[in-house]
Structures are given as C-alpha cells and as structure tokens.
Length: 452
Ligand code: FAD
Image 1 (spheres, protein in one colour):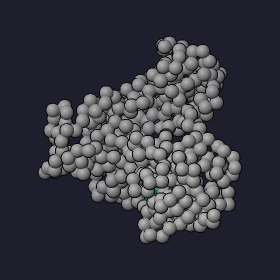
Image 2 (cartoon, rainbow, N blue to C red):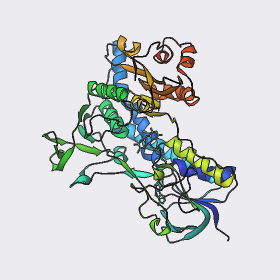
Image 3 (tube, helix red, strand yellow):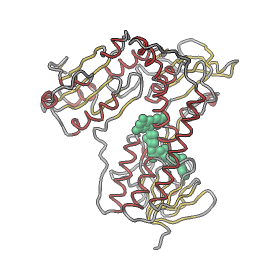
Image 4 (cartoon, helix red, strand yellow):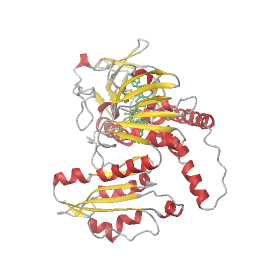
C-alpha cells in the first residue's frame, strides 16, 4: 500500500521535533508533523526554558545582598517584570523560529493545526484534510491539571505564569511537586509574598527524604510560607484576588492562586479509543520498550506515555524510535539512573536511588554531610548544602547521589556519569578533590553516617 508519508508525527515538542528531524534528515524518511500551538512544545514555550530564565531572574536578589556583604555598594530597585517579560517573549519567539527552521532544513513538512487519528495509518487534520502514513508517532505531551472543585478556574497554572501582566503582590501555590516548589522559590526571589499549601507530609515526594527535608527548611528560611498537610477546601472571587478556605482553618485572600497539582497526558480527542490503542489509568499511551503501542503502526514518546517526564528523556525516546523503526536497529530506551535537577533555591541534583528506595533492596551505607558553604557563610547567610552518597554494602557501588546546593544541577550531570558507569565508593574516594569547592565533599566523605 502506498502512503503519503513514511512517518506522521503529531506534536512539535521536544520528542516530536527530534524524531521528525532525525527520521527525515538522518534516515531519509518522508516525514510530516502537525503542531496545534507553538513549535518547541512545553519545554521551550511553557516549561524548562522560560522557567530557567525566571530562575536566573529571581536569583539576583540574594546575589545583590551577598554583594553588599562582600563590600559592594549596590542600589536596588527591584525587578522590572515588564522588561523581563518582554525579553523572555522575544527569546521564546527566537527559539520557536529555530525549531521551525530545523524542521524545514531537515525536509519535514509541517502543518500548523491540530491532528487526530482516523485509522491506524490515517491522520485527520483540523481542516478536514486526511494524510496517510506507514507509521504514526504520538508526541502530544501533557497539560496541567486543575483540581476538581468549585471555582477552580479562578486559579492559574504554570502555563499562565509566564504571561502575567504584572507580578502579583501575593500568591498561593497549591502542590508539592517540583513545579510547585520551583515556582514558589522563583516568585519569592522576585519579591512576591509566596504561600504554599501541600496536602502531603513533605514536599518533593519520591526524592530522598533528607534532601527534601533540607529544601523545605531552606525554602521557609528564604521566606516561602510553606504549609504541609494543608489543602484548599474552597475558593471564591474577592476584592483584591481570590478568597481561599484551607484545611488548616484559615481563610485568606491571595492576589493569585496557582495550581501545580499534577499533569495529564494529552490523549483526549486523539481518536485513539476506537482504534484499540491501549491507554493507562491516567490516559497515557501504553507502549513497550521500543515505544510501540498496542496498534503496531502507532508509536508514542515523551510525556504522553507518562514514563519519565523530562525533556532529555523525550528526546532519547524519539531517537530510539527512529533507530528502531527507520534504521533496523531495535533500540530500547534506557530509563535507568537518569539524573535530574530541581531548580528550587537551593537547587537539588539527584541520580539513582534515594536512601529509602535503596534500603528496601538490601543493606546500604549512607555517606552524608551538610554544611554552610564558604561563599554564603562569608556573607553571613545561614544557608546549608547537602552532599549524600547511598552505597550498596555488598557491591560497594554508589546507588544514589543527592546534592542540595547552588549549582547542584550542573554537579549532578557529572556525578551521573560515574554512577551510570557503576562506580564504587572506593573509586569516588580515589578521585582527588578539587579544592576549594562544595562538590569536593563527594570524594572526601570517609565514614558512613549510618548503615541500614
Ligand atoms: P511537549 O513538549 O509537551 O510537546 C507536545 C506538543 O504537542 C505541544 O506543542 C502541543 O501543542 C502539541 N499537541 C498536543 N496535542 C496535539 C494535537 N492533537 N495535534 C497537534 N499538536 C498537538 N523537563 C526537564 O527535563 N527539565 C526541566 O527543568 C523541566 N521543567 C519543566 C517545567 C515546567 C513548568 C513543565 C510544565 C515541564 C517541565 N519539564 C522539564 C518537562 C518537559 O517540559 C517535558 O517532559 C517535555 O516537554 C516533554 O516533551 P514532549 O515532546 O513529550 O511533549
């Protein structure tokens, strides 16, 4: 059977763009891609990139304070949000242009509209046009989820935060995951009065307990009014913002309320249910190790599969898909020991198992140190950092590395190479320290703080 294309990709985000480019440019396939919004997807338009630029913008306040403590004469007038937002929008426009150019340069035909599946080999575009393809790749990502409660529409989500006309005086952030915590720190750094409610017992569920404990302490110390074990029970419009009733018995008006209460895969209205594509409990496309769905011509990568929702993972999955389908080299995606950073203040970098998860697998030794780093201690700030290695007592391999410190995201990328290679604690110790740095502690922790 003749098809219009070898591959039709739905979604022009991190995973979809990479898969389309590599399939067309590298593997010589005839490829089309449909994107209903902006090219670059969540990462470029409303995720990693604008968020990191906001992180940078928010970090100048403590830097100015430290500068003064070091003897600089600095005058400060606060952040000009309008100026920053203008530059941010220009940068996102530039990046979107780069993505469009990359696709065109690889010979990918693009359709700027929504797409859905009509059958296992046919894509229907919003204007009614139908295109056939030997393979269809779903790379439609996910979207923020508001809680199901009355007046939930009064709250904004992370998608809206980049478009605020002005910074609010106060904001309530609901949620305890990494997006909630990052925006609590960003907005706090920008001078907004931040309150955070999280219904669980501690923020950053799933990460190492000691690391998340330190982050929550530091967030509070930096001015975030963090309430754990607390949730919203009602909200209504009020003079000056939104009146929020909480489970802790309080009733307060916040200028803005932001929900960071989870994300769901974009599989609604994709036409999947009639085709026999198996979906999981949260609506994610269920795929095998090669990203193939239950319908052989349909593959899915990235957040729509809800495996490990990170940009570099979506990109890897896209490349593995092309290797498997267009280069005849079946390549499963390796999701083991993927390092990740949380851009709170202080940052966290983590790879491998938390102490709690490792202890469930067998006997471990824990090497851990927490101290006041030289740079901020000199400025008189009480900030602490944490360096932690979780080591298998039998094999001596480092099973997990957790860093809470400024620059932890940069540090963990490098530590992750050693952890991925299966380095032992003794091999860490054989590495001579770089002095004076914060990260030198990773190779100088001699005795375990505990054996579990
Ligand atoms: P997406 O990038 O979401 O792209 C999907 C695209 O498909 C979108 O452009 C959408 O418009 C389009 N689409 C959807 N349905 C259709 C349709 N029917 N027809 C046509 N087009 C459609 N990850 C990190 O690694 N590091 C970070 O620091 C980080 N920070 C984040 C911060 C925030 C606030 C958020 C929300 C996410 C963050 N992420 C981060 C996660 C990261 O952005 C995602 O994992 C990544 O973008 C997933 O890529 P994807 O290709 O699966 O989907």
